[in-house]
Image 1 (tube, rainbow, N blue to C red):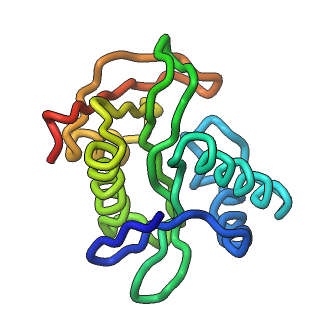
Image 2 (image 1 turned 60 degrees about the horizontal axis):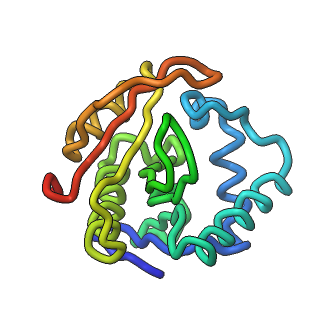
Image 3 (image 1 turned 180 degrees about the horizontal axis):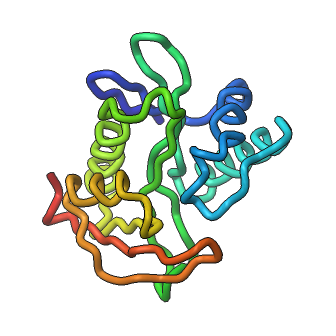
Length: 173
């Protein structure tokens, strides 16, 4: 699967993405609001890629590597992930994204997330997409609102309070 936007290519993860994924996920600022610790070994990123690639097979979707068209570089990931259970919900799709810090503030998360939502509503025929955001992550709260998500609840994760967001197909941008 591949999705092209004005500046980005969203594609399935490849083994060759491991080094750039490690660069991103080993940065404490990148994972600050994710509830996971920074990775410390390259093999951890290789394992994450294997898990994501299995999701493509099991659920026909998963997080996608985001490549900047201009440079050809992996700059992060974005996309929908099938979740079996969270916050009292079962069998749903969650929107997520993560980018290298040098690509923050350039509109890439918004561009990739819009494309991911469009794919979910049009290709996967989803009625609702969910997301949870750590209460201190102001940039992600802003993006959720910009994308048309509505805060419908709260949940407590091991790293603190998170807000639960929903976006319905009829509210698609």
